[in-house]
Amino acid sequence: MDMTNTALLALVVSAIAWADGKPTSDRVEFKEEAIAIEFTATSGEATVVFQAESEVAMQRLQIHDPLGRRLGTFDAGDGNGLRLSGYVLEAAEGTRDEILATFMQGTYAISGQTPSGRKGTGSAALKHRLLDAPAVLYPVEGATDVSTNLTVGWIPDPEAVSYRINLEQGDSDTLAVKLPAGTSSFDVPTGVLAAGESTHVEVGAVAPNGNCTLVEIHFTTR
Figure: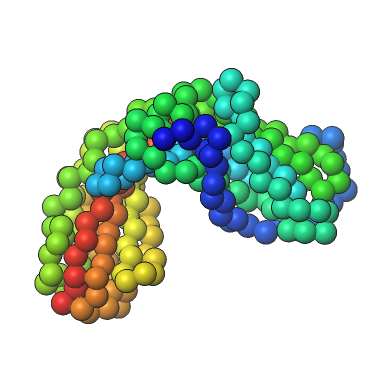
């Protein structure tokens, strides 16, 4: 798969901005910039997620790799269109090897432009190291008699700085939580899961560099 020209395919808007205020300088500095790999070990699929925030609304956003090559552009349209201040851009999925080959380690530049023409700048560093896949103890894959009062359990990784738990039931995202380092279980709140439904849980171990290795478990509630 040649991912070079199709790196950025999906964009999720995490905030809708206010109109430009009076400029305090010609340049706007992004904040909370981050780049991380998300690898689902169960399926073997991986992606790269770019994030940034701006206190001033942006109309256009671009990502450049450490060699200066443009990976993608998002343009919200003319000055009367949507104006954005929070961004989550996700690369096209591929195998782990494809993602590592396409997205080199190093510092990525994030640039933007406001409707009034002010430039936004920022950067974030990508590292390739991923933690091992979490060892989930319960529920087990394919279980058909799992209580809706579920406790998800796994073996904690001493290197993980946090854990991500995502629950989906049917076609809907049901619950997403972030847990601190050292956590080995999560009690699903009463009433979140319905009985007799196809469900899956993702347990993700987050490395110090921000990369996340996930495992998916599919089961049915009783």
